[in-house]
Length: 68
Image 1: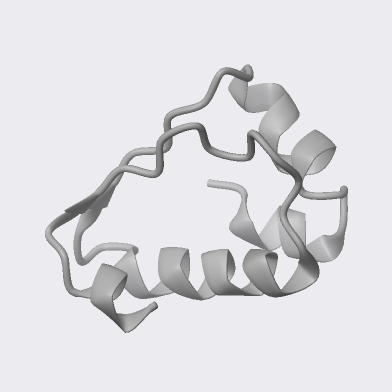
Image 2: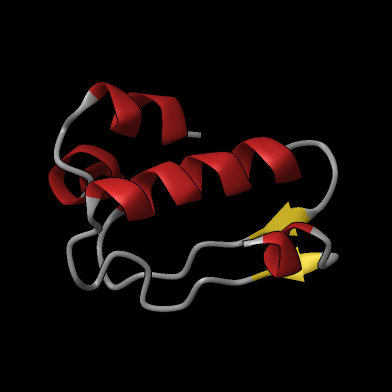
């Protein structure tokens, strides 16, 4: 995870093509929190943004925390 924190640009392609586990969701939250205001992150997906966060992250409070 630390290798992604230091990069100036991260582009997760095919984002949430498969469901994320609880641990993967926690890792994603930590990555987004660390990079916020520090570096650029672009999420690429086949899904509409409105359906990503709750539909693909399980609708948990963790999904709310990750939502941009």
